[in-house]
Amino acid sequence: MNSKHMLWVSYIMSTLPVLMLLFSGIMKLIKPPSVMEGFAHLGYDESVALGLGVVELLATLLYIIPRTSVLGAILLTGYLGGATATHLRIGEPFHMAILLGVFVWGGLYLRDERLRLLIPLRTS
Image 1 (cartoon, rainbow, N blue to C red):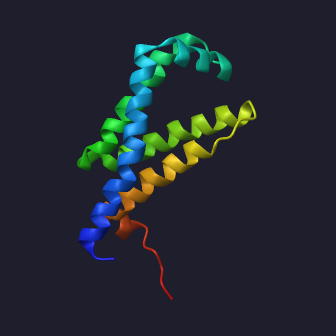
Image 2 (image 1 turned 90 degrees about the vertical axis):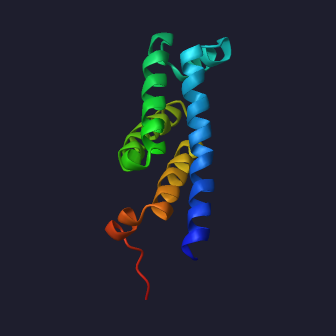
């Protein structure tokens, strides 16, 4: 895959989790009733919504900025790990958080040569 195609694929892979995480973070700040019902269902008090929303938005913004994208991806990995653990704890499907993490790192891997040099894919 040439670099132009790889860059486009990376943008497409990164856009999905960015849009979903920005929307999710904003909803945690706005706190509509459906989001608060979700918090109760997951076993969390409404008081944690603001903190989680801020963390989610800050990590996503760091991911969007090229100079801090690796730090953002690391922080989002931790955040999505918490989401995975939360869903596992109550016996719900957790695949979406893992898929978002794969897209975060996959998009970054394709667009950041430093990351590809750090973690090269080996060929036979």
